[in-house]
Length: 479
Image (cartoon, rainbow, N blue to C red):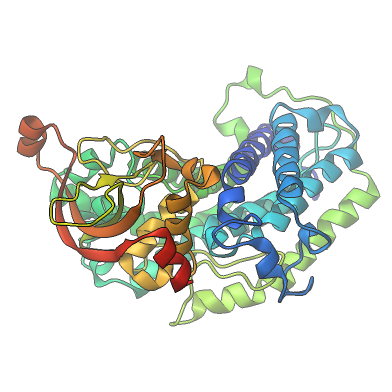
């Protein structure tokens, strides 16, 4: 490894670049399939209304020039195609400047979506994808060796992700300090996966060991990413294994996948791969302009790291905070507070003309969030179901749903096709319902005995009314 070239890390670069391209593909695919209903011209929180009060400086996006649903779909599907091309190695077949331009276009397109995405895009992994995607621009392709500087920038990013998450836990909920958070987390997390029921029922002493191991992995191990080899590889391996454990235990979109990929920036392939796999394509010396670009990126990251470092040192640490509208060099963290009980909002509709105690209500099913008690949670990550996630926040507090929940009910009353495509099952295929309402339920995982006898993964009990029954006319008057 020279001062600039990390010749032995070409396998690491290949994994990072191809992996990030796949994550981009998932993100753009989610935008193409969901955004028309969420933020389209007639969506729940329309982009034109949002941009009417924001300048380019406040929201840098291509859509400042013009927004239509067709243009937005074109941006999303262009991102899908470009990401797919990069995922199969197109960047290595073109000159270095073209490859860098491809990654930069991908970043700019996704930035344009995030900056009009409003609360639907208010997740830490959006900023993480943009920051990681921007650094990948400076990883090069097969025409040059991976730059040492960019690999270190990726390690710095991973350090902030892990150490920030560890600190937010220790400074937050007391259950992280007394090692009991995993008594609840697998059951109350936003979107459980197919193995979450089993994780929840692990012995409690093992849960305490998991939490203690998490503290080690997030508060101690990240410092090893900056140590000489082979310590850096060992530290990265711990991070990668930890992220795989999190991937198995729940659905967190592409958060864990990006952290896992960044870990490969610290993995020395010569220490984990057999010699016959280490032969790498011939690479030339990095051109001067590329070296200048990489060093310029490093200087920008150093300057922009000021506020994230202050945030890490602050007792009032904020998680998932961006300090600029380009989402570069952010603060990260999650689950500073862990819920002890799970509530779900269940939306129901009926065709009855008059509501009585005998009215039969039919539930709308969502794709990812818990609903039917006999339905095993599905694996969706790294794909992201945005409405399902916001429904989880709505169950925590109705204020989360203020901007979009009534419009959602209105779309259901009108049978809006784009909105219905966001759902898993529509009980009113022939005609929209006359009334809709939303009820709140307390959910918990069943026990082993209940699963065996009732064939149900969840048990639920009514916990009140979330939104009263409304008709189309009443809903229009409320608005």
